Length: 183
Length: 212
Image (cartoon, rainbow over all chains, first blue to last red; front, side):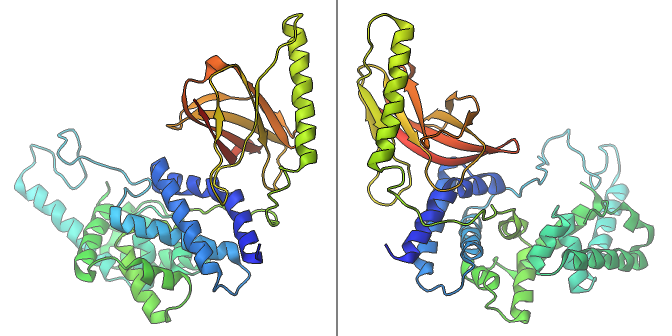
C-alpha cells in the first residue's frame, strides 16, 4: 500500500465519525446528509492527496471538509446556528421596530428612520471596523471573527473598540444600545 | 431583536442585493488555500459577510487532530493469535455462564468477529441467523486508546437500543457481547464503540450487523 493510501486509511478509520459529528452539530444536518458530506470530503481529500506536497495533511483536510460544507449549504441553505427564528406573522411576536398595535403611523415611521440611521452609520464605518462589527452583530465570537478575517483576536477587539468609538461620533448615545462587546 | 441587529440585517440585505450571489465553492477554496491576492481576498470576504450561514462553514469549531496517527494495520485485530486469544476468552466466559445458569452445558452457535464499517473494499456485514443467541466480538480498531469505553447497539434509524456500562480497556483489544436472540428482531443494526475521556464520549468505530 502506498504511503498516501496508508495515511488516508488511518485518517478515515480514526476520524470518520468525528467528521460526521462536526457536520451534524455545526450545521444542524441530518445524519444521512452528514454522512454523505463526510464521504464526499474524504473522497476529495484522497484525490487531492496525490498532488499535495505539504506535511500539514490534517489542516489540508479541514479546508476540504469545510469547502464541502460550504458547497452544500450554498446550494441547500440552512439556518444560521444560534440565530433566533421569529415568525413575523405571529401576533404575539413584537420587535423593537414594530410599534405596539395601538401606536400610530408617526411612531412606526420614527422607528423605521432610526433603524435606517443606524444602518447608514454601520455602512459608513471603515471596512475593517464594519466587517468586525457586522460579524459580531450576527453572533460570531471574537475568535471566530479572527479566523474568518485572517487576523489576530487582539486585532478584532481593537477594531470593534474603534468601531464603537466611530459610531459614538456619528450616533451619540445610541451606541450604548449595542449588544455587550464580548469579543 | 435590537435596533442595531435589525439595522445590520437591513444592511446585509442591501449588500446581498448589491454584491449578488455568494462566492462559489471554488472561489472560497482558493481563499482558504491562500491562492488569492490580498485585494481579491478582501473582496471575497466582503461578499461572504452578507451570508452568515456560509461564514459559519469557515469558522465552526473543527475536530482537532490528536496524537500521531500511525498507518492503519488491518491485520492488527485480524491476526490468528488475536482471534485465538479472543475466542479463548469468549468460550471461557460462555462455559462459566453455562455453569451459573444450569447444570447442563449450553452451546452458543454463532460467534461473530465484527468488521468495522467504512473500511476500504467490500463491506462485510455480519449476518446473524434467527436461531439461538449470538456472541459478537467487537474489536478496538485504530491506535488511539482511552481509559474507558462504552458500547452501544442502535437500530437502522439510529435509535439507541442498548448501552453498556463504562468499560475498561479490554486485554485482548476486543469486547464480547452476548446478545439474546429475543433482543433483536430481523433488521439491520449498528454496534458502536465510543471512547470516554473527561466525561466526553467520542464515537470511534461502528459495525453493521443484520439479523435475518
